[in-house]
Image (cartoon, rainbow, N blue to C red; front, top):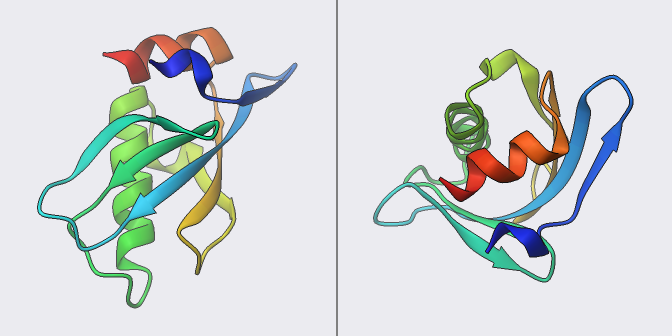
Length: 99
């Protein structure tokens, strides 16, 4: 399922991937991929950065890394965002997202 997720990796264990966020969902969830993007649902509304913070919290929890290691580098006000995570490899990211 996560094999279709497009992840780029730098030599220093920094990865980037895109997510498609559904804010205001009934439940928080990481589920599947679409067009090379990870699908993420959060219950928070997209106001005052609340949904973005929820995405960071959810991704960091799923990957088992600190929230400070996860950054939204593009798409702060859009549904499609580019996430950068440090301290984790591409293969480990795939494994943890598949759990």
